[in-house]
Length: 474
Image (cartoon, rainbow, N blue to C red):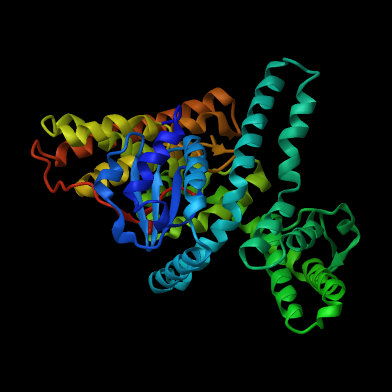
């Protein structure tokens, strides 16, 4: 599919009702997102059978075709080119209204809030990944004493984004919550301006960056509400002058004299809690986090972890939680391998596993989850058991003082190796993480092999899965 995205787009469109049935086209890290006027026009079975399609996720009137990282952007561009000439503005509006109505009926206030917070941070993931890999590479070069003339430049490139991440958080926050993005960025920029060191709050001088991304998020949220309040009250002739001025002034003062201090307390508490949790109950914490991550995803509660990850990365340079959670994917891989061995006569499920396993090893677990473990039932639970065992393995070493973290969020599985960091040598950090993956594979395999008989037990046909079950951070 990567070599011919045009053919993939041409194969997908007729199976979703044709270009005239498509009201919107977008993509995230792994999925082509199609808004549809008539979801019943989709041929789900034929769509899943298209070469390169790894799965189909349903969200009301939206169909999300899992294609995998990289290739999804190319296919999306081709779909947009095919859809654009036939998509009418009126139909798009109607489709948007239908999707909004579906979301209002299906989403709880908590899930909606978490999803919107996640939408603030997801656009930042590519930069976190790129800068995280460069930071790891630079660390290796510095430790080895290689290329001393290049390492300062790499350090600057890798660190610049994190130094200004508050501005980007402010921009995406305002965009997500209906404000002017640049005003959100301007208000959030206050938190990282060096001059805040001259501001005294509660008898203590503020520090640039105090409160981290949480402070930036709170500042931009306040700025958005102030801006929207002004828009409805300031005369049109003065709006261009007064609204941005009042927004930046009111939100900036509230940020300096309240939000930065409060967010700083919360951010420090998150870092302290994460360190103490792993230092005192690392094995148990890893077992719980690794074992419950897939159910959290199914409930949509995993989105609450995104700002926590980002806070830890900004504060400590890496998040110690992600490697524990990544073990859920290892358990999933082990479970799929056991199913492959046990169901020797089920050609369909074995074909699915063969095509999805490479992606699973690299941390893209959707094809295995939605094509194998969830339809079969019990392998989903044994996959969780494998994740729990892997998490306990990594957590046990954290209790011994060997922390394993990730400098970015998004990747997992083998793809997380370039982003690993910790308080020990890179080799030891990688060995602990690799040991956790191996533990997850083995336990997931053995537990699944024990509960899945040659006939498949409670096997079922692959099916479309509600969007609440998505694992992709987008």
